[in-house]
Length: 126
Image 1 (cartoon, helix red, strand yellow):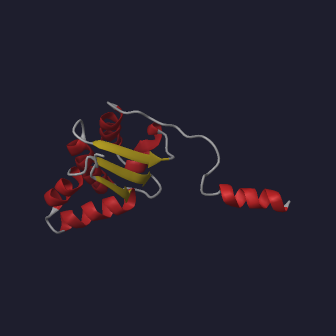
Image 2 (image 1 turned 120 degrees about the horizontal axis):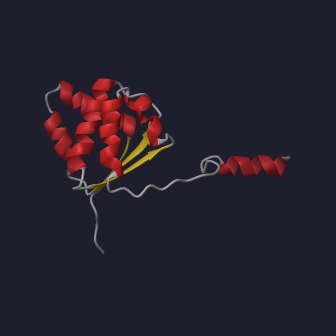
Image 3 (image 1 turned 90 degrees about the horizontal axis):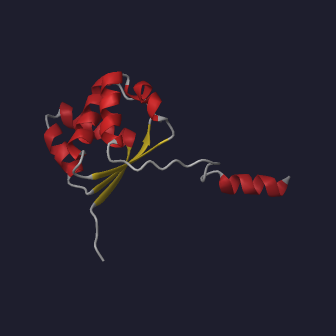
């Protein structure tokens, strides 16, 4: 069996770690930390706003991993709306460009998996 060094992190937590590292003049070390993973899973992109300065930090991470490492991003925001997430169309386009260049996009439609048990119980009680 072959193990792959993987990290799962919520997007907001990732941004906060990069932001803190920048303030402490440790950004390069933090970017290297996230770049060591063969697979980085960034969860819930777009659930919380990302300001322009933080968008630049996110871009640096994506750019460093581009064509070298695998990255999975979960979001419920269409790519055309990423300008709104990042607050800067130029940065958003650069991020989307790098992410989609070699990407396999998996679109999942349907009801929330987290709500399924609740919905089943409600239907059984009606």
